[in-house]
Length: 54
Image 1: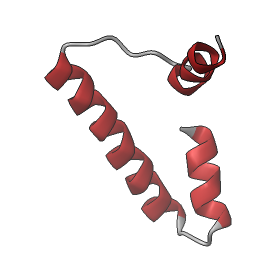
Image 2: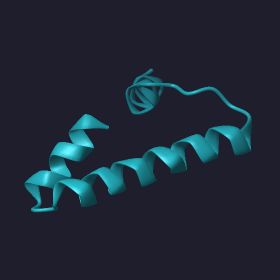
Image 3: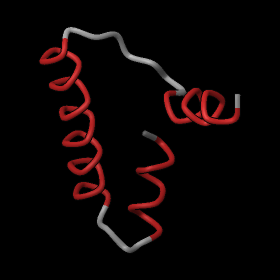
């Protein structure tokens, strides 16, 4: 989430607005995990790329 936050700041967002965007994104991830009864996979995109390459 730090990279996302830094990207928001680089696009000219105010710090509080960037924090709100990060918290909203995190809340969406948490909601999806609870809804689907699944576990968080930190490097999900990297794992998907590895599966496609195999």
